[in-house]
Image 1 (cartoon, rainbow, N blue to C red):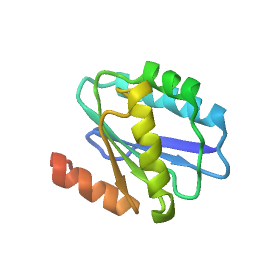
Image 2 (cartoon, helix red, strand yellow):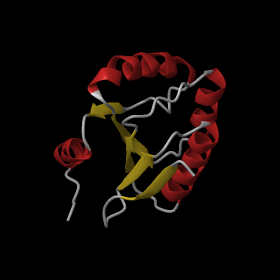
Image 3 (cartoon, rainbow, N blue to C red):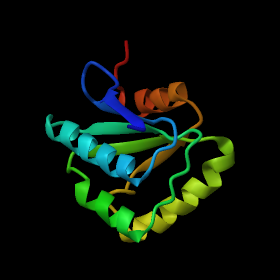
Image 4 (cartoon, helix red, strand yellow):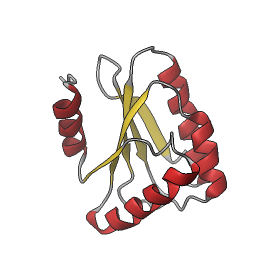
Length: 130
């Protein structure tokens, strides 16, 4: 398994997804399914932090449509942690993805570190972290 997923705060308002090793498409699909399951377990909005540092999964139209089909109604902002050198690529992918998967790419933000991602969510949505 090339990923981990867990609640990132006690209020269950943020999910942390992290890719490890060299993830493949099965990891992407399984992570999306597990994330949807966690979001479905609560009724409030849940934001997602995806740590993609060091990993570059190439998404095609089929992947984007699959992700689109899994987006729960209570999904909030998705903050993607990427290396600075990958930011242009990720923004290009986001722009292309918005056409094929408008729900999956509706609200995306970027951060360089996990701390920066958490700080962004705390500032924007007044979330609590220990």
